[in-house]
Length: 60
Image (tube, rainbow, N blue to C red):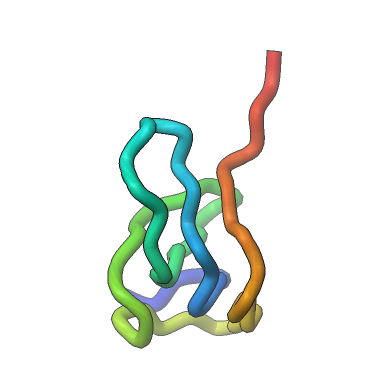
């Protein structure tokens, strides 16, 4: 599957309390659709987040 956007090689912090890890996040229709190890996702656009933290948005 090709995503609209891949946020690549970011340190993913998902808020679950699990240890964070470097991964790719696949974004489809404005939402996180998949998270997997680095290099696992393909997208029409790619944002290199190496060395940066990646976390979901938090809304009330």
